Image 1 (cartoon, rainbow, N blue to C red):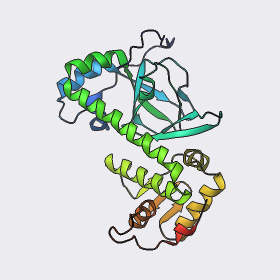
Image 2 (image 1 turned 180 degrees about the horizontal axis):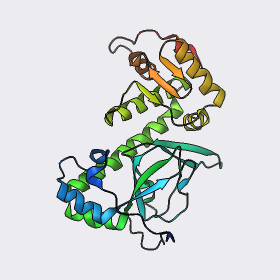
Image 3 (image 1 turned 30 degrees about the vertical axis):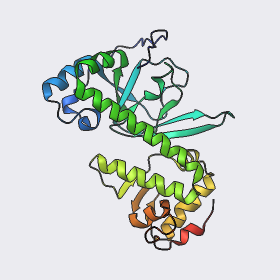
Length: 265
């Protein structure tokens, strides 16, 4: 872990909120190892967490700010964004209950992205210095933390893969990723709300706003999804998966023809 002692963390002038009750949290099993007993959870709670409300459009942390805190999302949805070498802003990811945010700053001691709430949300603030001390005494927690870091790396790699995809593949991949993440949280993998705007989706996928709207309409017209404003239902997950798969020549059967493959954005 990086030594961040040379960086100064922000000092809040407002009174600190009371520690959150991790043992009663609905997403406890996403943030903590499942086999931790309540005594261990309560001990960890006393060391680490305080709940913080983040209003819609409020900034949780900004690019360039000193790093001292990780954030576990308790409820709500947030987005993270950064700028490329040309100075253009792009959205790096969408975050929901159970996600751990701020890990990109561990290496340098400063945040490389900005996090903004997509709706009224709540996060659990975790002092990274105290977390490091707890990890030494709790091997299960250290393993869980490393797994969380690994998931973030895989997610970043998936986002980088968008560069080699057509617009249809990118949008299908996003819908399937959201489906899998909601399923992991015990929610419906088929029916969910797109908490991000169409503009956010276009900025994340590297497409124009018009392309995203056109592709969603095509998905709807082809019977892949049902769409009512931001509420989406995945009607044919198999065909969506077919849009994201490329079978190497001579290996297995090719996926059934999908007319959407002929579209380009």
